[in-house]
Length: 219
Image (cartoon, rainbow, N blue to C red; front, side, top):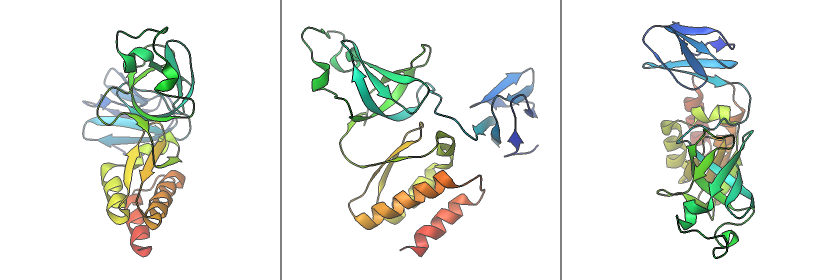
């Protein structure tokens, strides 16, 4: 069994009692890649991180998006994808929403940045929601963009390492957008540099150690 191997669409990654995750399908007992990238086997889960591409929406993903327009019933949100996110007026105003009474622009306007969740991907443009803890408009912070394919490298331990060294707060969207908040400019610059290192790096099993070393050397 080879972990982190380079795979092409149709390649068999592994056979046996495993579960397919991102960019992997199950045919019989064979788990096959649907993308060009690197495979990873963790416990019984098999994933493929694609080398290139925009964000592919997945239900329950946390995303950061920008309001680009609205009509009488919904907002259109740029979520760094082939598709726009659709935030319905009823998500904010509730079931009693009335286009003649309620003004969407008083709640969210073009250019606003929001933290949202993918609610449904059955339609062409995925429905998103800001109903939930800590979701909604983002009023402060530095917005950083990296490839969505690099987001899996921002593991919990990597985020904790950066936050502990810089006193920054990091909010990661699965769509490649990241919000950094920090009370001091030095910590903000270090956290931005760390995120950009991750965004530019190719696959590296020692990436977390390199990030820690970079942070230690720049104290």
